[in-house]
Image 1 (tube, rainbow, N blue to C red):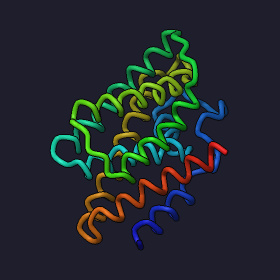
Image 2 (image 1 turned 180 degrees about the horizontal axis):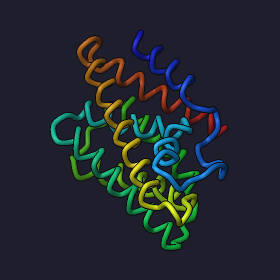
Image 3 (image 1 turned 60 degrees about the vertical axis):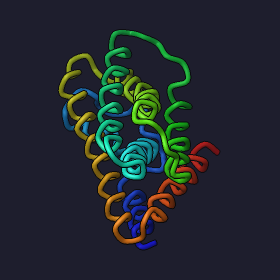
Length: 189
């Protein structure tokens, strides 16, 4: 329970209540790339949930799912910078928070390949939003920044999951998934 409260406090302290895709600010540097995923609760919860879900399933899922997320996110970024228009990007990103949270809350088991496909599907939309906002002048540094921040969020999810697993078992991990669902539902309303 203590871990859940810590996560809730950190999330509230580190992010704004708005979605990360405001269209404001520069999206052309390494620093802005790092900041982007950290400026929206939707990004944070979805990416942490990938790490948490990997811990719940165990084995190769712990590293394959985050890697699939980052790789497909970069593909979505590239698609957007090349002009591919994709509908429903923001609803898909918000859905990722809720669905990935549900997968954690329900301790859903999935084969490694299926989890990678699910993570990758949502990641494509996250990456597309990054690419839509990116300035042509700094594509590579910006992409490197948000990829690094995403890896950090996945690692945080894995770390929280491992810590919770040791102290309370899977109950706290599942509660963190429920928290993501609740926050996602609040944002959607």
